[in-house]
Length: 296
Image: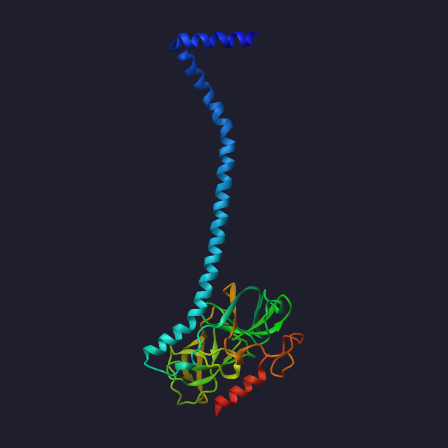
């Protein structure tokens, strides 16, 4: 009752003599402000933290999405770059044979093996995603290699620099076809099947020729870095791969629109079964045939 009486008295006094209690009201407000601020601070901090984390996660998701879109666009642009360079040299060899528009699927690298005797990577896509033995793999810059072993959830990729790997290529400037072989070094390929009179220059771009059906044609592979002769007089030509082998975390699996580059049945002799050991090359017979054709 006493509290009620005091409250009523203060209300009456404040109504009749408002100015007399203004100083008291200001004093109470000043004393109460730090208490009010301290009470509101935790709630404001939690709200600010929640909004900051939400914005950060949104930015991360947006960044991942844009990176994937950029990678896909760069992969699709590889063939356009080859076409542009050839047009600048006033060549028309591609013509109607240029097929732009292969379907690609992103995959992430999970394991890397870069020993001098075996250069391969593993990715997080397998038969459940439609991956097949012999499938071409690229990154945002050029061809990386091909699938040599497939499990339900993972696949092994033999890089183009492996000593057991060969890829049919074409010198874009002249149209000269040959084979680029791996050397066991991540930054080096060799072209051992060219005659001394071959028109090859440092800086020439090598693109896939499509021979053998292993790789789609007209994708960048490497660029000539040296042309010379060994002590026996034989021509020695070296090239540097354009793909960022074992560096890019994301790669792309290529499905060609051309029927002849679709998945080959497992029981076909040209393909190696996914259950066989990785140590045996997946395409050695095809490579030997291509090498013989180049020598002729």
